[in-house]
Image 1 (tube, rainbow, N blue to C red):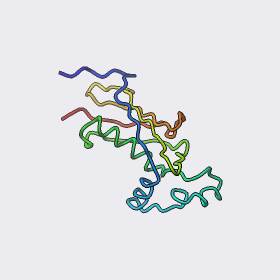
Image 2: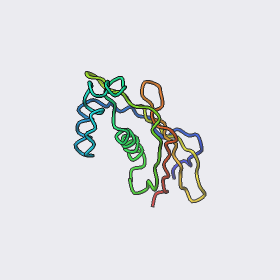
Image 3: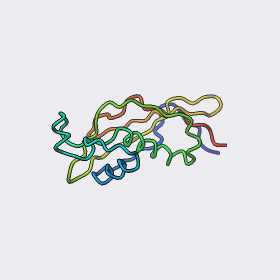
Image 4: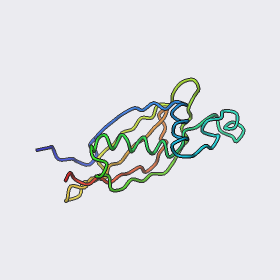
Length: 137
């Protein structure tokens, strides 16, 4: 029998590297070719400090880490967040996203609200990131 989950309990912590090649692959998969995600000059011309990761890529990376913990993506019944800060991606180099999940609440039926924290360089890049995970079938 597994140990019951308790509010505040850390479920997972993982660091994920994001480089420019990953941005290009994501752009191709998503169809989002906004030049702020690949063109340094353009990003600076519009007031950014450089190229930034796609917000939906950042959200998707966090969801992927959650999915690894859950083991069955069908158990994730909802997921939402707000984008609070861009993720600068250097060239050369990587941006490191620190993703962690804690138990927010546990319902009587075993449904868990997972509160996600996603940071880059120690600063939150997603706000109010939460997912609801159904109990195992």
